[in-house]
Length: 210
Length: 134
Image (cartoon, rainbow over all chains, first blue to last red):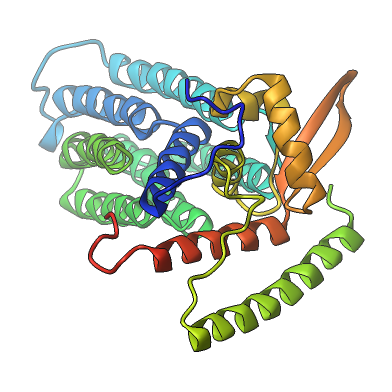
């Protein structure tokens, strides 16, 4: 606790500049969520669930590790919901008791995610019965991840965060590579490069604000 | 919600301040004098308040208790300094209701943001070249 109950000034301008920087860094830590807490839950979700998907539904229809066929999808759904709730709470905690343009930006961005995923889920659900089984993973995984990449890039346009653009572009590129490579490989690419990218993004963001 | 008239007044003030500051700087340059530091901001506690508020995006308002928590100040202490900043037109304090609970919202006016930027610029000119941290 600094003594603040006085009108004390500074002898040294450098001291004032250091105080300003300290206070600005402290405020930023309070009002923006820890990047690790925002990215790592998603990174782990992708790593685990796409990893399971690769092991169960491997390339050329091979089963690398024997497990119930519903397990990868159940893991994905469960982990997505958990990560969504967790990051939602962390984000809301950081911006609590602050109102104005930034909370409206945040709300619009959050609604964009939900609207995008809902639309795609309805479209993919409608056409899924006409799609061969081995292509279902590419349709759902590839489509949803394409949306994630685009939304991260759009997020960087809202908050002017370069790292977020790099992450979005990376996800978009590895997703397309995985889709072109084919079923099975796509899941492996998303688990390693996609999930790994999210883990790296959380780490880089955390290092930057230290 | 910001009253559009207030916002317009803020903008006008900021503009006039900017012009004033420019002439100040120019005359300082001519006479070789060091810039004067804004006495409203040049006090530890108020500098901390303004530095913290400057990190919120323009137009955002923060509740009094949250600001208090970030700054680690007592309520009485923060009130005193906010009042001084408010008198100078640097912050705006509005009372409102969130549901049934009354809330006090604080935000840095454009005039305050500009005064802070000028203050930081003045500090930097006071530091001899090469001595500047980071």
